[in-house]
Amino acid sequence: MNEKALVRLMKEAYKGGGVKVCRVDWSYLDLLVISTGFWAVSMPMEQAPGKVLGLLGEWLRRLPLIGEAYLLRNKADPERLDPAQKSATELLSRREGCQFAVDLKPTPFYVGNKRALQRRDDRQMLFFTAGLLELVDGFLHTGATDTDGDLAQWQQVDTDITVWICPRVDVDPERAAILAKYNSWLEGARA
Image 1: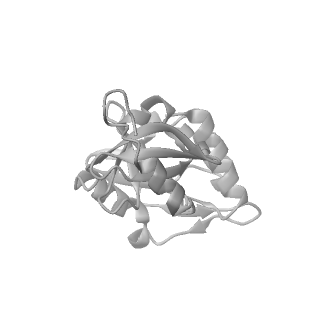
Image 2 (image 1 turned 90 degrees about the vertical axis):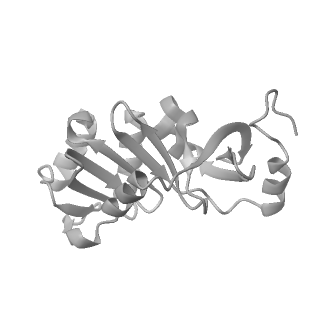
């Protein structure tokens, strides 16, 4: 996972609508989950980069305990969230339920600042903000999406780090259809 990208995205979210952070005990792992409305990252506490923990310590004035969840925003006190309403456990359940089964493959196409990744099953192009894809620079080829295409997931199995990113839907459908004629799954990749 790209630590610099995560720190940058956390700072942007903190200054914007806020960043959610929670800590859960999940399948014998002490997980830290950081999320916004567009992306989420789950990692074991022992894998959390020092700069990430430093930001959380600065904003929360301590690190969250297992079972705690907070919304952190600039110029506002940390807002405690009801653990029963944490979206983190839903994401983790979806990950373990193998709901992300449609492979994604990066393509050379960009529409503005959005990069196109292609689904294996129907060749549909999904578009992701290039800045968010920086999170998964080192393991971009491991992406998968749910069958609806509403959420994509990348997993670093050796570290138990998982990244979820929502595809953008603000790309012109005609342009997306033209790009879908390109089949990145074929050897030589031709339209």
